[in-house]
Amino acid sequence: RFRIRADYNNFYLDYDKAVSKGKNRTDNSYAVYLYYYYSPKTALFGEYEYIDANYDVNKIQNSTQNYGYVGINWKPTEKVTLKAKAGLVSRNSDNPEASSVTGPVLESTYEHKLTEKTKMKLFLARKLNESTISTSAYSKDTIANFWLNKIITDKIETRLLLDYIRNDFEGNIGSSRIDKLYTISPRIRYVFKDWLQAEAGYEYAKRTSDVKIVQFDSSTFFIRFSAGF
Image 1 (tube, helix red, strand yellow):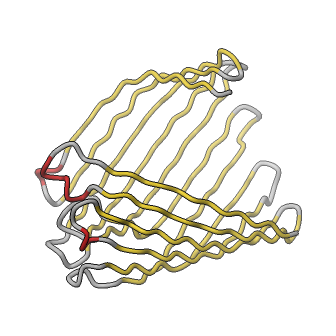
Image 2: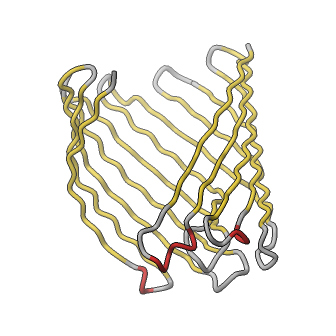
């Protein structure tokens, strides 16, 4: 009935422009999970994650974050899967101007198998993250992600992705800022072999902000090949 899992992740951020070099950093994160299978359709779990953010130049911006969650995985029917977790995050910074902060973190996922060949997934989250701009220490992020997946044939699959992200930049270093990013991306995938796939798609992104100079619209067409052995 019990299962334990451990993760390690390394995140490396390197900006091209000199004006943003002060935000270059390397993060190391460690996580441990404990699962308890209450029934074949229900699992309870606890999660702890420690993140150590180290900046290349501005060492005073270094910080640590401690996340603690409890959650549930539940499959009420053969077609529906639900996952939810809630907890607290505590962030401590080496910068005396960026006060420590503790706040709630929430995540939920809803998956529905609409037909044998059609699936949908909805993901919602509210969490604290390290800031990517120079005038704040951290950001409170609100995330909504939706995808719809349709299998056309054994080799052809289509997907529609919709994303919304709101970043509330805070941290007592400079003026606060709110960014909103909207993304839509239809895609089609073709399976040549079990080990070789190709994907083509289009992505439109629009960012709005109360700092108008950072607003943008972008359109991207892409073709991607992936292989695995």
